[in-house]
Amino acid sequence: MADTFERLMQLISAQYHLDTSLVTAETGLADAGLDSLAVAELLFSIEEDFGVDLGDVPPDAVPATVGEIVALIDGKLRAA
Image 1 (cartoon, rainbow, N blue to C red):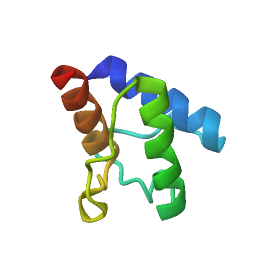
Image 2: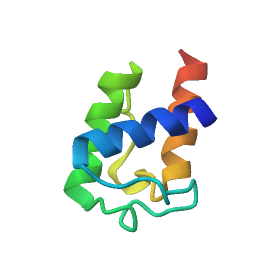
Image 3: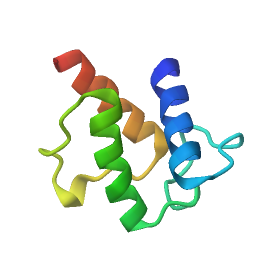
């Protein structure tokens, strides 16, 4: 999880030019500075960067926290 978290923080920092130094797994995506459009774009970037398919995530089940995204990524990587 730590490696996934770090990679995700690097992706968010690079893509959105946000300071992620205070972001934790419990941080909400909105609290991290990501609006709903940015979250949708982030999911596409995660697919590309991590090599996972997130197309089966229903719109009403999009993760709300950084930790939920990390868990989603890790779950997809384990299933691959």
